Amino acid sequence: MDAPATKPAKSATGPTEETVLDVKHYTDRLFSFKLTRPASFRFRSGEFVMIGLYKDNGKPLLRAYSIASPSWDEELEFYSIKVPDGPLTSRLQKIVPGDKVLLGRKPTGTLVHDALVPGKRLYCFSTGTGFAPFASVVRDPETYEKFDQVIVTHTCRDVAELEYSKKIVDETLNHEFLGEVAQGKLVHYASVTREEYPTKGRITDLISSGKLFTDLDVPPLNAETDRVMICGSMEMINDTKQLCIEAGLEEGSNATPSHFVIEKAFAG
Ligand SMILES: Cc1cc2nc3c(=O)[nH]c(=O)nc-3n(C[C@H](O)[C@H](O)[C@H](O)COP(=O)(O)OP(=O)(O)OC[C@H]3O[C@@H](n4cnc5c(N)ncnc54)[C@H](O)[C@@H]3O)c2cc1C
Image (cartoon, rainbow, N blue to C red; front, side, top):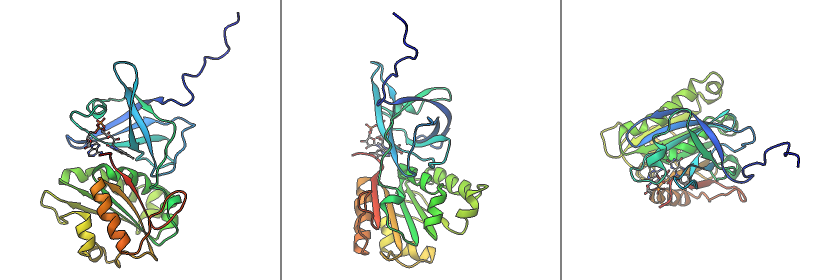
């Protein structure tokens, strides 16, 4: 019998194996890494996908991860926590260039332009690794076509945990092409909860006290002009969502776009 002309595909639905191109460690709890992007892998800026590693028994161990790179980028970037006993991240934090990481085939999510109706000002409220989807959104030129102002807030416990978001915003503003569209529109507003820092406190307190709006010289949240994306812990999402509802904003989805959208930065 003749040999088949091509090898059968491993699995048309299972994860693909991608190569680690770069790894950067920020603190003992945070790192980012870049993977090769298959030509067939399409996503909208702000979406998440399953990524992972093979377990010792050969089965894949996958977790949801926001894609931190924008949809136009040839490489895929991720921003990750290191959970000391975490089944995935206790091993993922040790990857080096050349290693293989599993990538799911079906990106999805609600932190996308499609889930918001048009507005003037976009707020991206994040805590911890919840900044990851916004690293994608703020590097997408479409964001600046759609909004006059893009305010990305990042709240962490320690000052060192702000390094990644500062770097992404700084690089965007100084980028050869993105800089032209983002300058004068993109604003980074950082706050810290457990160390001394010019802006201290939780984002919910900074919204409800009005300090956020005074600091940025903008009017308070308003359903006519403002659109909001929220990504953080369940508690942060619920509290921020409540403030949006009190301001008259309604929650949107891919099926029914509206004023604000939410996504958990992690389960639990
Ligand atoms: C929609 C979605 C998107 C996500 N995107 C990201 C992302 O971009 N980057 C990322 O690092 N994680 C992200 N996560 C969390 C991720 O799926 C894993 O939970 C994380 O990688 C830890 O995996 P683990 O197997 O080591 O530990 P797990 O068993 O998954 O988690 C152990 C415990 O660690 C804590 N934990 C997990 N993830 C985080 C986190 N990100 N920040 C703070 N505490 C955490 C939780 O208390 C959890 O119970 C996302 C989760 C969801 C649901």
